Image 1: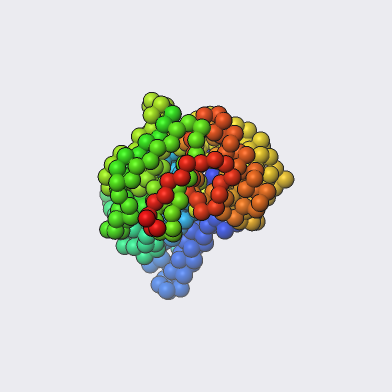
Image 2: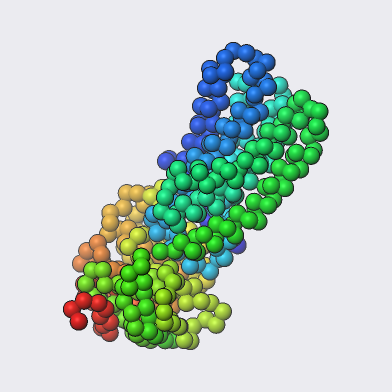
Length: 222
Length: 200
């Protein structure tokens, strides 16, 4: 347990310090959302209708942006060698790393959502619905994305491969995230059904993500 | 405690690096692995550390902790320093102490032992190559592990640093430790030599 807490503290510290990249995701999120009204035009009704989808897409891309550093940095400086062979089970280590990554890169997206909702002409209910679905859904993005990050390390390919591997896996999260937000705003479906599925997707990823990532890291040792 | 390798075969990228390699090291002794570049010194250490899979043969540690695997009882000091530039010297060391766990010691003492106590609060980004090496060595002191696997440990160390490290290795051997080191330069302490590849 000490080991996992130490790992989470270290990753958070690195992320929050200069060059750590915790803010990069939020800035990217902000840029995407700010650009969207310029692209769509000054049609307020249209912006309101597209709002949840834009916020979700922005959050998805922003979380992808920082994900490739999840194992790559540790791999490059040799820390991963020590982590893989340590006494702490690798599955737990992977889960701890994903949790730290979500706290540093995913949670700020959720916190930024109310501000960005204003730019898209979303009212308070709609904004809080989107923020709530992001809170439930972004952990799934991080934990499934971790599988891609582990594969990218073991295959010695960064960046683009990660996007190709991870984006298909995040489609269900996107579908139910946006569906739940829309349900809260316009109906007629109840908010509960898609939101429960979204939560279920997150829970599944908590189980599958760490095991798949750990298996990939073990396989790829070289 | 005895570390035994029997009939080890190593394959990297479809090419056989070495085969039918036997070695043995026991408590209080040092095994120096020598050989030309590319002969597989690092590969052998990584095999022992559990970072590569054996293509054949066995590696066993007799007389170690019953419930721990060999890699869990070993320190691996590789080419790469496993240091985070954004963290201070002390934070780097404290992280590895907490993460590796087991029997640990005060990081301040470990830093003093490698002559880095004056730089404890300095971010690791500003360390020189030799200082980075010293900080990695401090990791071996902050957490007790009976087996030390050292890959070119004296690289980048100045003469004083090499003397200091020889002393630290001697202390480790005196406590019943065991060292396997891949090296080109003399380690500064008596060692059995295991020569692999080339010039045979």
